Image 1: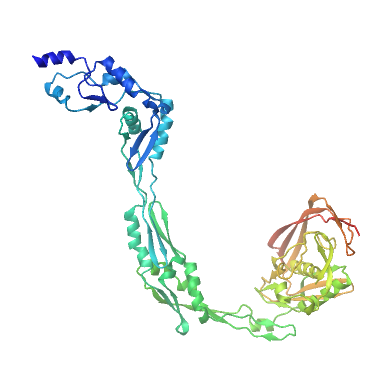
Image 2: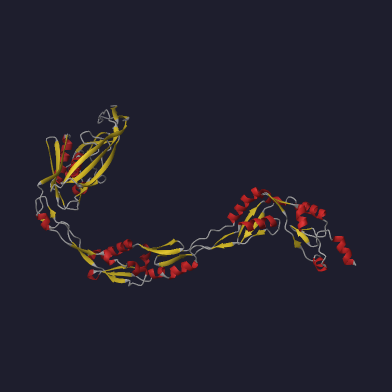
Length: 532
């Protein structure tokens, strides 16, 4: 009888033991429950809600995330009192937490959920393998995590009022290169790479040895498409071995024709055949091939033999050029360098460097103060005028068809030289060099006097050379500058411009051998006013 009275008295009320957000509303009629929830939980939308996934947490403010509470719908979700006496009795001793029914503004909620999902995301990190100081070094992979976006929205929307916060499942993200891959490489090819020294036996009981501590200088591992792949720099390993076996090699020396006509005989060499010797080297480092092996040698014959030198002829002009106009002191310097260089012979394949050939060009070598152009105006320096020799030599080997290795035009155009086809030099900084790419030696002959300088390249004439100037463009106007002092030399200045020169080299049958174009930018030469 008492049970029936209790049931009919409470059947339209919220079931006993019901709570929302920690607020008990069991046994209340629905209107009262709704009012109680509003009174107790009103304003809770401004309290931060913690969202957890695994070890990570994030937060959101419901009011800023488009979340509110539908009070009547939440009470309705609690259901009706059960007629089951066991359920009714259990409600006297237990509490059942009911999720709120949210009012949701999707436009405000979605950006917040995207942010929270990002803060609960951990990118996976691939493992890696390396070699350092002869030891295999391992970088362990990191398993990342993400959350299901739909699950996140459902859990937040339904459970954001739960005092314990919201928890969503952390879904693991496996790296492309996981621990199994790392372990396989570290215990496999990487361990093999540092398993012992690499020993290359050379002549004269000399060995080239690469200890494990240096293996990392030429063995590396890269991550690619879910795998760890080894890279062996055979060239770097060869350099290490060559340092040690160089003493077993003999360098070839070309025959030399001296200025007095005498000949220094050639000397054939012997060198390690590195291509053959290092064949299969990768398998020696990473695989099952022996880590000890023999170096293979090959003869290294001189490119220019004594016989070739004896038969050399220098009776044909390959290229020549003449420049005129120089001061007395510049003429003295030109005469000194002519005396040094005239008669120099350049063997096949060799490079002639003017700076290396002459060495220092100071007063001890007979050079004097001569005219130069400095910052666009006239000046003097020891060795002044030598650039005229450089320009003349440049044009001589230009028309001989020899390979230009390096030349540097003047910053300012000098009218006695062909535009775009001239050169300057400076000891220790700016050089002039050419290569004799022919199969016969050439000789430099130079003469100076009477106000002119001529340089000839003598040998076997093989080419016809054409020079095509590209004209002048992009003119720039000179600036004015005032200079004080008695050594000032006034100048009316000259515009700067850009020009080009194309050299076309043909053989004697008229076939083009090569062509190249040089573009030169000349700065404007300033207008100099002397102020006394």
